[in-house]
Image 1 (cartoon, rainbow, N blue to C red):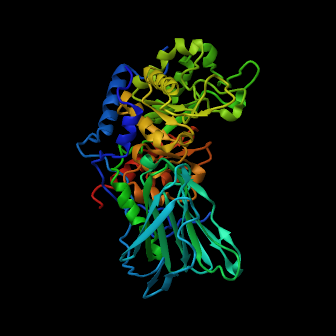
Image 2: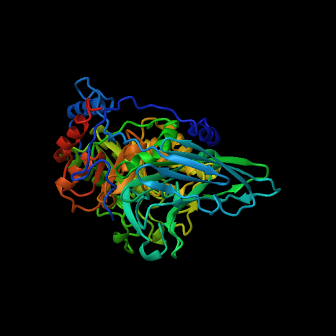
Image 3: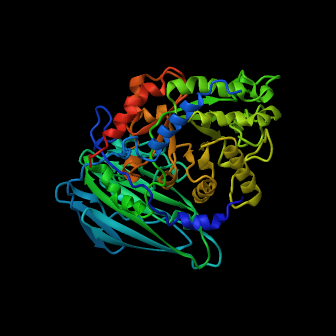
Length: 561
């Protein structure tokens, strides 16, 4: 049966949100050698268990999922706590068309520079400020008085007196500290990145040796439906001594339309930098809490298709069991023979339909279910053996933010759920996955889809399976993280904890994919200790090896507020 709710209805519902997480024990779990205020360091039935064992295993797993843990106590939710910031009062002085900010301890923090507060624009722009104890709220009202659509301006907040060298937070994938050095009058700028496509949140955070500043932009993403581009830097030359920030609004304003944007500017001590975006944390909390139950149980993965295996007699690059020719029994045997004794309760299968041999840059194929060969379809019931063994089966949905009209398609279009043909085909694939025993999916390259369509689309998937496990790749943005876990790679996780996610989205679930088999048990346990769900592809570390680490990460949360 087709979903009864339209994408428009779901789009409206996504802007409202709602809370569902009820278990929220917290702890101050810190990476080894890192203090809470420090900026992250720089840069057949063969293989199935007997029926009695299957039933017992399933009952145990269900009790773990419903929070009973087998003893009536709820499973803890990993959260990081952050010490309260020290008071940092500032004085805001207004003058016609400008303002300055200073503190009794550190002097001038923001000078009343002559630079305009916004770029040249055909729109009418007004702004006003409201001082608060540690900074101010800067409200822009942008109106289009013309008869045609006009490009939105760039919001410009300059005059920051932070010396020649600053650290800023790069939050494209994780939370990483980077340095900008303008010593000698050279011009330096951070990378310009888009929110929500690349950045975790619409924020800019920087600090020098004494204090920090955070600028966060509040705007209704689902209603305005545009991205923003942020950056911080300093121009070249002896007269360019202050730092400038930019929020470039990547959209247009319709005739007679007006919009409001609020930039919260907060100052703190250097070590309290995370709290400079406290107003945005409160704004995000109005959208509700996470819509899923955090799950730290490890996932084991295997691939059916791989471009390295493509050959004339194997155009889909299918593994040695050749499900495209022989059906699924041997692949399922392989999974069960390892996953069951190794203690894995979740398995992810990549490229179940194989891979493109033409236009290989478009792998993994979006047709993760729709292009199975005859032997694959005829033996699809083999996958039910995974569920019968008490294991959740997850499929990796290739290029899930894009749409292909045919196998080996040379051009992949952006997936737009409001396009009925595309939506029907993609929903049919999800139904096939569920029919074939899937408990959930990994959404590959999901940020290729517009954010204001992505979250309503997830709601449509959940209407067909409310308890589905859905994880989005690559590392997603804050609003998406409220709805589904997001996906990092081990090299990203090794650069430091994702402190913005920990701070902004309590109860978040964050998966880390461990490429290859080069990680040590100590490294894997470190990810788990930082509240990450590990995805393993090798066979050198089992779920049994990690059971104590998972229990420890959960139990340490109990009673620690």
